[in-house]
Length: 126
Length: 365
Image (tube, rainbow over all chains, first blue to last red; front, top):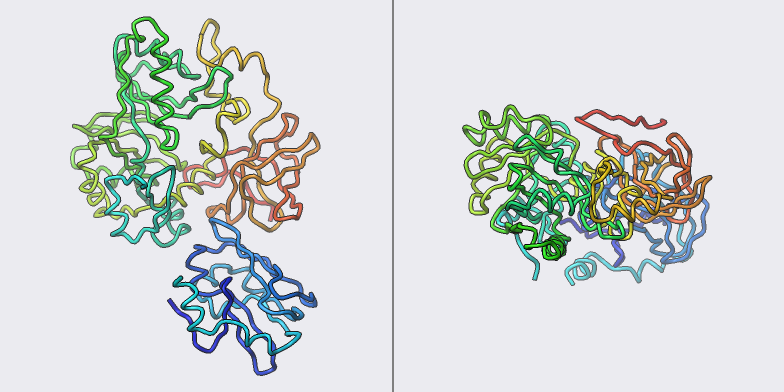
């Protein structure tokens, strides 16, 4: 199972990548896609929505069940990955490529409180 | 501790993800539920359904006992091997289980019941037989010594014949819902997918050999996940979701399985006739984007209802459901389903969405 070292993570299985322009790109981890099974539907947030940390912002539905996706930090949604909604299975085949949405964080330092790769590996082992 | 079928080692060897189903350790999928679904529609797949229970009903009173016990009429079965789908009802017409009964002679039947209800079913049968003079002159024999593999798909029968030399001669004449004996095997042209195929019932000690012989013919193992989406597309009820003891067959799309011929006396008949149904089970095709699941509220012009089963339908690339709604709701009506806090539009359809690989209900877009 893949847990790239350059990303941050949440215990609810989102990954977070800090971009050079200080925005954050968010997706779900390899572990999460494996646990969900075949993903068939994605509901992504609208750009412009202001969200709190931990707020439900997206839904990933596999053939078996629906799973909420949470904003890892507070901020504003600046973009959703519209093409991935037409190919939800790309989240299974390429979980770190098929990102879901981007956030402009209210406070960039908030990402320091997120798990690093080692912390996430430990969290999903538990 | 959960029970395991004789095929449990084969599931582990094939990389199954195991879940608890009605107290049994069963494979939910072997990698991809979607691929398994498509495999059955396009070619052939096999399901371990050994958690289901065959029950042999024999003796001079067997036919009369089953006519009393079941809502469908076993007297319709006159040709050896012929099968019948039926509900077994309580006195108040609540559904205890749905089952298939196979006829060999008027003193020799085999019933196959659901795993989750098996113990309750056997107890009920014994209780009802006990009320009859002489115990009804029947023997009720649960057969946990048997295993069941369902092989389903357009190429399933040919692959069974290739895997089990001699079986073609024994079973090539079978029409849908018929069974034949082949040595110690029973080959039944029944299934739960809407495709052709066989359900094979045989001594449990042969399970791994038969499983491996089928695998050698390219029959892929299929988990309970795909079994559920296949049966949903095929319009087949799942006991415990689409029906249970709180509803009757007329509220469950199963009026066609109830034989109300004059003079017939079966358990539940009086209640059925005293209480005409106010609800019906229908199909729903979601027209907005989303995924229907079980227990979602449904809003219609005739009152509220609820989905009983729902999923993404892999053959249709759409979401479908069964829903219990007021009897005034008609085919083609548009209703609303509350999906995760939002009301989405769905069209009322027949319950059969896919049969023999053909899509019967077309999506709007």
